Amino acid sequence: MKSVLLLSVLSAAAVSAQPKLTLKVHTGKGQTGYDVNSTMIAGEKDMLVIDPQFTLSEAHKLAAEILESKKNLALIYVTHPHPDHLFGLAVLHQAFPMAKIVALPATVNAAKTGWPARQKFWFPTYGNNIPGPDPVLPEELTEPYLTFEGERFPVTGPLQGADGPGNSFVSIPSLKAVVTGDIVFDHVYFGVPKDAARENWEKTIDQIAALHPAIVVPGHQGPGATDDMSAVTFMKRYIEDWDKNAAASHSAAEMKAKVLAQYPNLGMEYTLNDRVAAYFPPAAKGN
Ligand SMILES: [Zn+2]
Image (tube, rainbow, N blue to C red; front, side, top):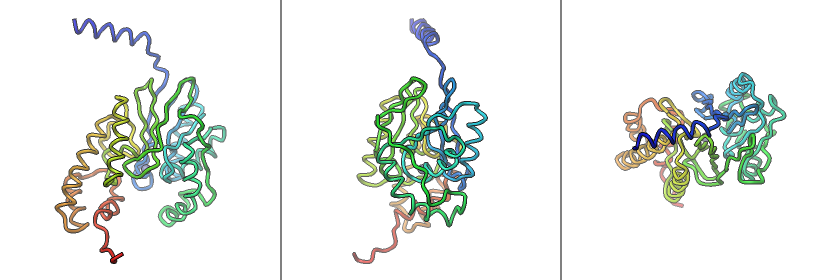
């Protein structure tokens, strides 16, 4: 009986499902690309890109992929205002001036006010591979969804991510997909939130899990990532081990060695020193 039922459900799905949308992820490589994901959702004619890469060189690679798809880049969404999800707009805006760029109002505001300091901060590392002091900014999204080829993609945020507040996620119901910004990280060394930030981040994860997505695109991913809910399993295990390692270590160097031994060859190793240092701050000066 069960198999008959399953078959009839499958055939009904085959008749009604319109495989109209496709989803493809472009991952920036290594420190230049910051292992950051850009998600390309293609319809019959148009394309939506969620997060436009960090460095200009990676954004050019993304632009090449968009051009080769032969789709019209109609819409760009920025999940949150961190530079690795924002700076690539400079390239995409120049290459596709007709594309509408949108973000939540809080993201637009933070992108604008934060740009000068962030541009200055990253310039010594990346030089002219990031945009100049004049920001390319999204427009404010006035409704809590993106409209794309007649479909609505709900946008949820701003809410707490793993790497700070002000994140958002986009769900694409017809693909059973969620594009998460820096709420989900997979197979990378990521910043482990503490205290209230951790509790609020877990609530965000619960909101994503409640959608039962088949596809979950993390904000950053390393080798072995599978773009599904197993990313959340990975994060929870990593955090549990992180806490144990922090408790058992006497210095940042000891902690780093433990993490590397337990989790070799993840992406974003260039961030690990800072991640560990957050758990072993220099001695307080008595204030
Ligand atoms: Zn990020």
